[in-house]
Length: 225
Image (cartoon, rainbow, N blue to C red; front, side, top):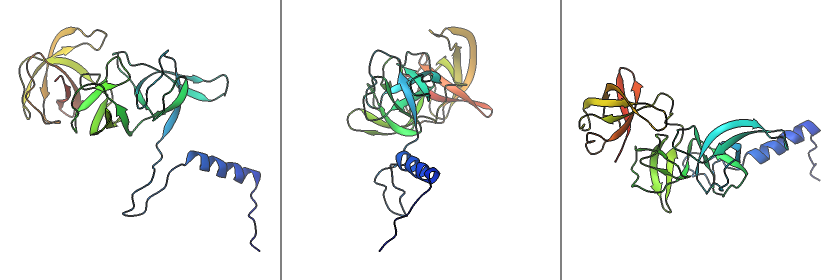
């Protein structure tokens, strides 16, 4: 007769925790995973509106939940003032839920997504091409959903501006520097920016742009369509 394994209380608790935390399968070579677990964080929605599936959430605080004693990330609706941002999963969240980062699904509203573009939210749960520079587009899906890399772009160190003159892919040109306050204002300063990261049509003078310092150059990371 087969023996029934017996575990200590400590080992049993560890096994239960692992079983709860791990809900996917590790694929072998050339085997497609049935499900891959994403890292998540417990969040609390402080907005009166529920967060829709795959909605973009603005992080506003982190605190200990008095009911559970666990630390939660407090989120709200994006409002055009920047991030950081996390993303909801497949279920609508009224109060408590899970927030995801990394390569995730994201709901979008308007625009035609292309691989390599930098999108972000404005003042809705969905992201769009003209929003705050926040995520890197990897691909598009049906039903207004994108595959994005939410940790590829950080709003820290991003400079806002407008092109002083037109610029084409592969060129360096002058741009006005605008403040990061809300609403942004022209600082009167200029910078030389380089358009070499995401291929696209020429960017016209007066169009909004955002760039980051990359080595010795200011590399454009986003441009108004």
